[in-house]
Image 1 (cartoon, helix red, strand yellow):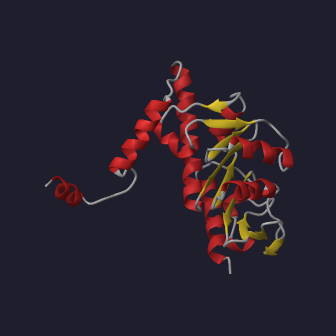
Image 2 (cartoon, helix red, strand yellow; image 1 turned 90 degrees about the horizontal axis):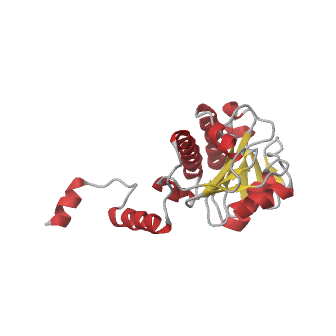
Length: 224
């Protein structure tokens, strides 16, 4: 029971370490396990070494129901995201570029590339609060309104998605977008996409089935 979710969380932790989005114990991952439980990385674990049997499982009130280790200190934040946004998975990192920008940006990371629409466009910066506190959870939950990612001032970044793979992809995308923005600012003032441009991207993506593979033969048949 819960083995699939515990394995997914452990594999995501190790992948984040491989991608250098986390270092040591700094970060956490969780996944919804059925309707009433969450598999979550344990507190104090070295993420590069997390094994499935180390992953904790809690109920929606945060009570441990499976595993021997206490869950992450950011459990309240994870639980809040599941409750408010009906997420399937949550990834919190201390990714270098995202964290660096979270130390200098006042309100948001602008939408400088159309791929950021997968994150909700621009990415808000939640005001600084002490880690593991209800105040931090509240600030981040507000920053995520209408978004799938947020920066956490002087702390790190967070993403959510319907499943672990997508939440991990969004964490990687956010770090890439932060890197693009940083490099652009070194050259000049980055241009941002306005609302009309964003809507045009959405329309084009829907029309062309962007992001999914399809047979070239299907395209030929549509043109006949």
